[in-house]
Each structure stands twice: as C-alpha cells, then as structure tokens.
Amino acid sequence: MRGLTLIETLMYLALFSMLMTGVIASLLQVKSGTERIEASARLTDEGHFLLERVRYGIEHASAARIDTDFRLVLTSTEIEAFEISDGVLMEVTAGGTLPLNPASTAINDWRAEVADTGEVRISFLLTVHTLSGSPVTSLFRGSFSPLNVP
Image 1 (cartoon, rainbow, N blue to C red):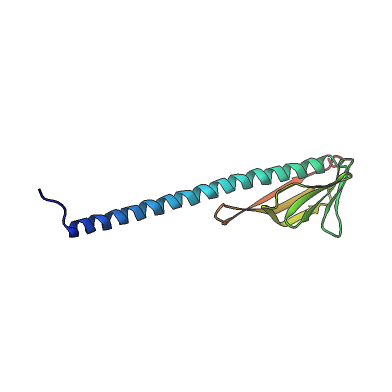
Image 2: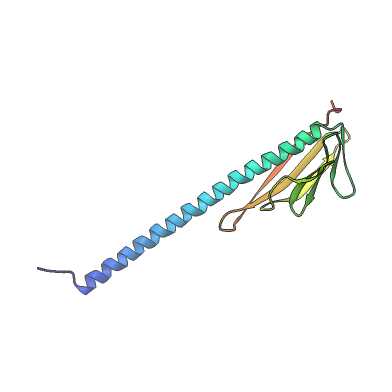
C-alpha cells in the first residue's frame, strides 16, 4: 500500500486553501452586493413614501410658502408645515409633530421652493446605510400644486 507523502499532502492543502480563499471572497462579494440592493430598495420605498406624504399635504392645501426657518408652511386644515430636524422630515399638525422617516434614513440637502405660479418644488437627498455601514444615497424630487393653483 502506498500513502501520500508529506510533500503531496502539503501541496493538496495549499491548493485547497487557495480554492477556499477564492470561494470565501466570492461569497463576501455576493453578501455585499445583496446588502446594497436591499439598502437601495429600502431607500426607494422610503423616498417615495416621503414624496407622497409631501404631495398629499401640498395638494390638500390652499397655499404654500417657505418661512424664515426654511419650513414649508401650508394653508390647510390638516397639515400645517413640513420641516427637517436632524435629518428627519417632520409633519407639523395642530395635534403635534410627527416624524415621517426613521433617523436611520437621513434626509440631506432638503430644498423646497414655491414658484410664482404657486407650484411647490421639493428635492432632497436620502441616505441609508447597509448592514456593513456603507452609505447608499439617492436624490428625490417632485413638483406639486396646492388646490387653488390651476
């Protein structure tokens, strides 16, 4: 009976180690890609929800303006204003202030402007982090008109 020599065993171990290193590196790449896809999906859902909520507030208002604190102030029976506080979009009503996004999904570069026509243009950067801490950012924007604007 002939067995493996020490040299042959070491060579097989070296080849096996190289193969496993490649497999593990590939799996880590797949995991990282999956995290980014999941974060992008969360980001898209969150951004569309925020735009829809702002659209609802604007379209159910009779007028809109920007105040000195850069808040979007609405003339409405429901929503009085939208403001940013520490990266969170806040909906201000007579009953209080409601955060619309979790702090883990931060709003940056919030811009709201009211055109001479009454149309309100909104844009903001939304950032979410993957499980490994990598940021994923996307720009959201929309143009909406209050009820009294044709």
